[in-house]
Picture 1 (cartoon, helix red, strand yellow):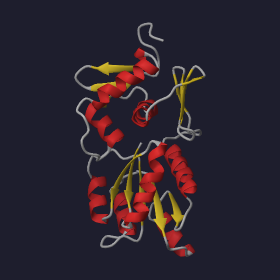
Picture 2 (picture 1 turned 60 degrees about the vertical axis):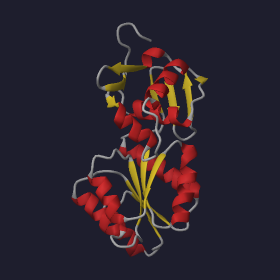
Picture 3 (picture 1 turned 120 degrees about the horizontal axis):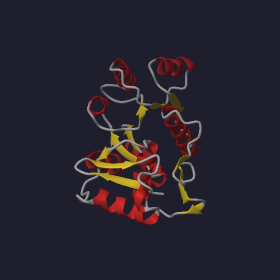
Picture 4 (picture 1 turned 135 degrees about the vertical axis):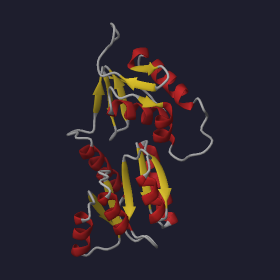
Length: 226
């Protein structure tokens, strides 16, 4: 899943990105509130925002208020050094879904982010299951009919996107942005390669190519497929 991190402390931002990378999140980082708001008002497909309130210029509270004023329901996890009750209440009233007070434990950040994403997708459990495939974001485990399947970080992220929206057709460009974010030097056929590997490791009929558009994970078999 693709996360936007808005944090002006470079060392903290680097630490968060490093901590979330093994969790198979794609984390894009901005240090400026105005740039973050611009990105969020565009068509960038983020799953959630981790937002520092103490940003220079356009502070996090104003960014949060603008996000909600534009009707954007994107989950927002606020980071703040302000531990006064009134400040926490203000951030929740402005539209934050949750908050963490600095300094915080990385494990708690991960747990709160997982819970926030789960709620936003209407899931009581973080586990995704479809056609014998089971994907658990909490343990980063994938299995087929009970047997563990080893996936690379990119393969896991791609499968999670498709399983999280069964029946939805994704374009190659959308999947590329969700799996790679703003990283440079992405091979033009990267998504096709990952799709090929997923089909080989799981089963060929799991992911269907929609000619001229992209890919879809069908929630039920088609034409006798498993």
